[in-house]
Length: 228
Image 1 (cartoon, rainbow, N blue to C red):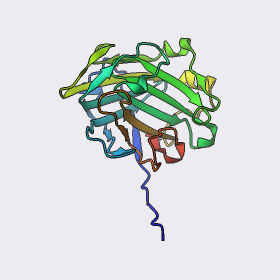
Image 2: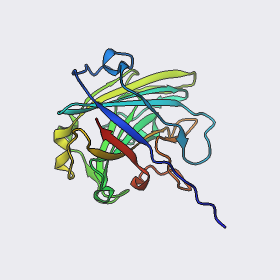
Image 3: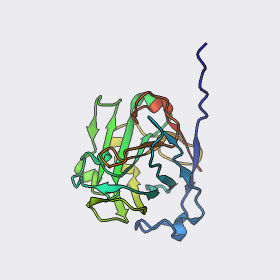
């Protein structure tokens, strides 16, 4: 008899900001000190030989969703320099989210490498009805990163890096129905870390994904974001 794997749904409370942060990639600044971090403890495929320690914090106000990643890493590389390029091949952290509870509408995927270059799409499902976020909308996303834009050759020794961004809510309704955040609102989401073309590839997740090969585009496995 086949054993059924029980998956506990992950949940994260997104705190409401009382101040407006400077987006500077500083993990230890006062803005983030009282915010709880989530951790990417799950993986897809075989357990990787190199398993980065990844933490993420989120906060929001009426204008922005603030996101910061802190990565204790190794074998760090970033060669993609173009907006909407294949940053997943670099040392990369990713935030996939449906701005509500109905995952059938599709999801946004925001993928950013350690050098601050990002890809931002909305899609119905993987490769289906993909909409690139317009350059003029991408230009109003505030981004900061601790490493140079290009990291090549690969850094093989232990390295800690951060990326931080402020995502304006006002751009999202151009691409999908959005339940705007306020107290009690629920979004569905997952967080990932990858490095497809580094010397030690890996595919880490926050909410556990059951699939035979690495695939982040599976909203059925998204966890829950609840806005405070």
